[in-house]
Image 1: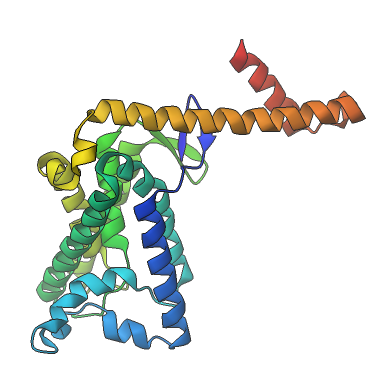
Image 2 (image 1 turned 45 degrees about the horizontal axis):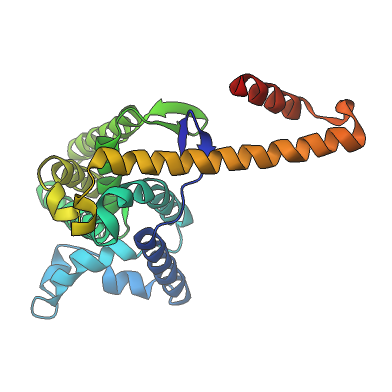
Length: 272
C-alpha cells in the first residue's frame, strides 16, 4: 500500500488482522453452503434487535462478520481494506487494540445505520464489515495523513483518499433521504464507523493502545514500521535486480523487455 521512498511493498501480516480475515472468510463460506441462512440469523435490523428477549442486540456484533455470498466483491473490498490499513493500525494499538477498534467501529456503524433507517422509514437487513473497516481506515489516515497510497493506479495522500470515500458516504446518504430510502448499500454504517475511527484516534487512543504499545511513543513505533516496510521493499527490488542481471549475463542485454530496462534504469538512478 505504501508508495513512498521505499517503493511498493505489501504489509506484513499481523496477528489480529490475520484472525479477522480468517473469521470473515470462514463465515462467508458457511453462509454460502447454507444458502444465506447464516445471513438471516446474524444480520442486523431494527426489528431483529428485540428477538430472543434482548439477545437480538448481539446482532450489532455478529453482523460485522457475515457477508452476502452472492456479492463476493463486498467481502473482497472489506478484507483488502482490513489487510492494508489494519496491519498499519495494529503497529500502534497492538492485537487487542485492533480487535477493540474493529468491534466498536462496527457497533457504531450499525447504530448509525439503524437510526438512518428509522428516519427514512426503512428497516433493511445489514451485513458486512464495512463499518468496522471504515473505522480502521480513518484511524490509519489520522495516524499518517500524508502517506501515499495507491488508489486503482493513482498515488494519493491517505487523507485525500479517505476523505473522498467518506464524502461519498455522506453524499449517498443525503440522496437516500431525498429518495425516501437508503438503497442497497449501508452508507450509514460507513459513516458511523468512520466517525468512531476519528473519535478513537482523537480522544480515546489510550483505550486502544495496550500497555506494551503505550511505551516508546507513536513516532518511534511508526518509524520502526516504515523501516521494516522499506527493508522488505529493498529486498524485493534486489531480488528482481539479481534475476535481471542473470538474464543479461546468460541471454544478453537485448533479451530485456522495455519494462525490465526501465526498472534497471530507475534502480541505477535511485542508488546514485
